[in-house]
Length: 98
Image (cartoon, rainbow, N blue to C red; front, side, top):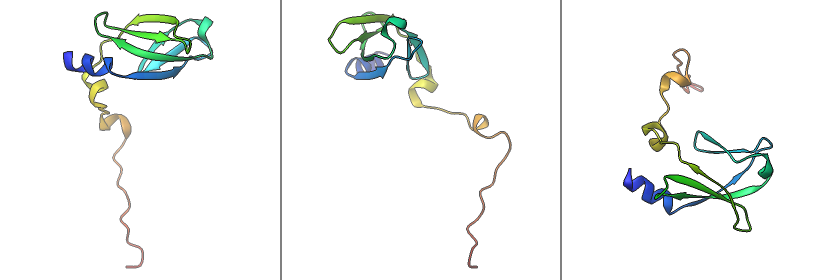
């Protein structure tokens, strides 16, 4: 996890805060409060606090919230095939003109 935290700490993301005051990072929702609804925030990761820091464009702190522990699926982007198709599916063969 140390390498993952080092990688996250080197990035800055921009997120839009919804009308209800929430924003997401990956599949995790973070609530900043309705005060920040409609704002754009810059998000950085703080490894020493294991937290995401949300800042307004003027650099002021909107929130610093504990990071939710990523799962292996979050890190590699794994989606089980059983979740995609309810039943087996065969793509048609391109047999036109044969």
